[in-house]
Structures are given as C-alpha cells and as structure tokens.
Image 1 (cartoon, one colour):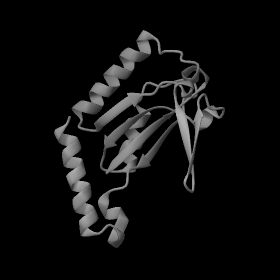
Image 2 (spheres, rainbow, N blue to C red):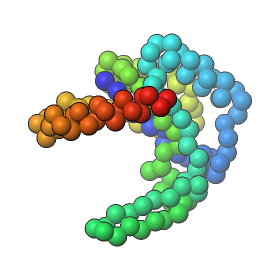
Image 3 (cartoon, rainbow, N blue to C red):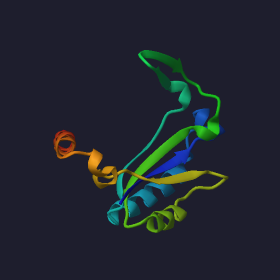
Image 4 (cartoon, rainbow, N blue to C red):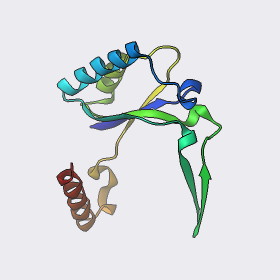
Length: 139
C-alpha cells in the first residue's frame, strides 16, 4: 500500500525558520534508511503558506486567496510518499523519524485503482495507466 505521511506546519515552519544542520543531517540519515528499505517513493518540504495561494470553487466562480493562512494546525510543512505493507509498518517507520518538540505527523493511505470499484471503468483505468506512463517517462 502507498501512504502519504503529512508533516504538519508549526509557528516556526510558517515563519520560514529553516531547520538546523543537526536536524537536516538526522533527516538525511532517516531518509537514506527509508530509501534503502524501499519505503520512500518521494518526500519534500514546503515553503510557508505566505508563499502559497488557495483557490475556492463555487459553481463556475473561482476565488483566489493569497497566503499566509491563519490556521497553522491545518497547514502542511512537508510530506513523504511511502510504499509499505500496512499502516502498522508505516507507523513503525514514522516512530523512528528524528522529530521533537511537539511535531505532529499524519499518515493516510493513498487510494489505489481497486478502491474505486465498478465506477472506475476499464476506459478510465486505461486512461489512468496511460497518464502514469507519461509521467514516469518524463522523470
């Protein structure tokens, strides 16, 4: 199963405070372990919400709101995409992460094609596979 590991923002990440060298080194070592184990598919940190925007969809109307956004606890500071056997395995990997100081991290399964059932028709599956192949060929 694939899962998204979501690192929640805090006041420091929203203020643009960069991690210290020791945390960067520890995170690099941790990421190296994830890659060697075949768990990590992707992972990135995100700039503060002050660098972002939100688009609200209401019928045909689109409303753009520039950051920063007020509710820090609802914001994302970074993420990983992992391939694991189970949520329990993901939790065990995450418990080894070099976080401290009240960092909150959420793990959520990524939908797979079979999760959509009959609504995901053979034609839609073929389209999805074609798009994924195009993406893979570009990277």
